[in-house]
Image (cartoon, rainbow, N blue to C red; front, top):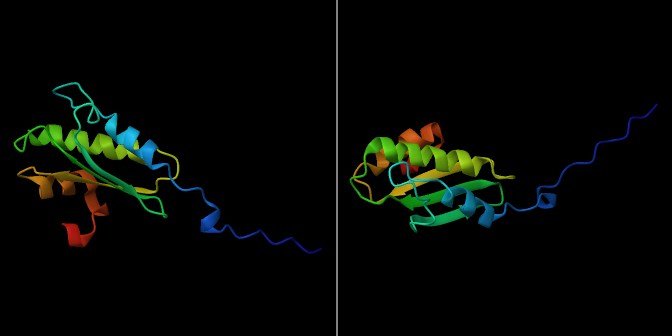
Length: 118
């Protein structure tokens, strides 16, 4: 008896990730101190998703001196929300214009941050 071959899944058959859904997910995160969303405060700078489902989100905080614990909490929540969007495989969060930006990004992204961006 011959077992039928399982058809290969072509990556081009996978629907693209809805970038607006990623933007809504990231933008819906609340600043824990101000209790307003990143979108409401116009803090999202860039949202991109490539064909492989890798999302990159850049945002800035309300102050370049924002307390680190708030910055980390916001970044982690952005990453968590974006990873919940269907089709997103990885999410890398970049924090712009903060005096500890690189350190905060390492804390938020862990080992997912490419070596060139550390």
